[in-house]
Length: 484
Image (tube, rainbow, N blue to C red):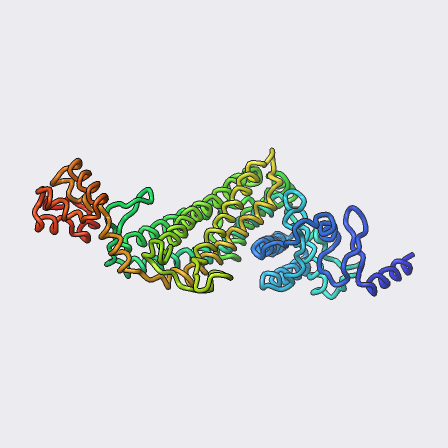
């Protein structure tokens, strides 16, 4: 019987497969795959999107396994030789090796059992290799469930991995946002001398400086960055050690506190206990809150992108107050056309991220009793949101914002035609007189100065002093000195 099994195994290996076993029985697995039976079942059961887990999800789940092996070893629960092999295998994955072994579709079994077992099986089989056993050796000692998954459950590792994965990419995201804010602030300084027509309701309004518009963009982006950091800080609360339902069954009493400390040490992040392991599995509110902070950033970025498209519109028949870098031809049929492609890209990226946020919100509210089984799609969308935003913001900053120039002549030309400049005369001639002047100027094409002087409301010299457009952008009441 043994000889027959060995012969069957050798034949399968020759055909490119080997036999792995789980609680449901035998499964054919690609001969050289580090994963095992449960991963292969997931591959066959969920041929949905063709996508694979984001590196952040693999990194975070592996980091948990690496920490657990060390903690359980130090608690005397895991054989040191096996623990050290698991740690070495995990370090390889954390360094970027074996990336092709994580193959489970994001749309998978609830809670993330398939992803958890994919990581468990890869680490177990690689640990077995480190210990000198072949992948098809029936005596290989490291078990994905008993050893790699010791004191763990999908139900506490996946929510922990979601938090760690977001924190892993957080510095990249913050750096991208900070660079964008810096670039906008530099343009605010560069464009501070450009006085232009303000616009409200897309209609002419009192003057502003182009630098003031860009300074406002920079401040809005920094405000959103602050919101993201605040929400991310709540992701530092870990519920690892709750195991299946929050009770901590099958975990050492010191496991939770030791895991929080070990993960803090290994990741370099300041992590803390959630304070309630049941809440950590029931509630996805912290990830949903973080997702919402990314959505708010997208609202700001989408608005800025729209403004760039408006301000650069034309050039012959639009506002044309700024010029965006020409990075590619804009039309396959219209020669010479150049489009605001980076702003358009940012709009699309932001719409996509806001759609991901809706998925996260719906999945977060779908939790029931002791567990939220929608965690795989929460994880996938959060990591996708961060990935898309990092790429989109970096491209927008480097290929668009830093190269923007001001069309000073066009801005001055539009401002000269703006009858709303009469607003500055309101404190002297009154609102109703100002309205009459504006209407006549727009109807006749005359300047505000001409109409005011013709009506005998002010002298030409008084009008010149009150209609200093630069001073109008600095606030205060025109023609009235500030109190001393």
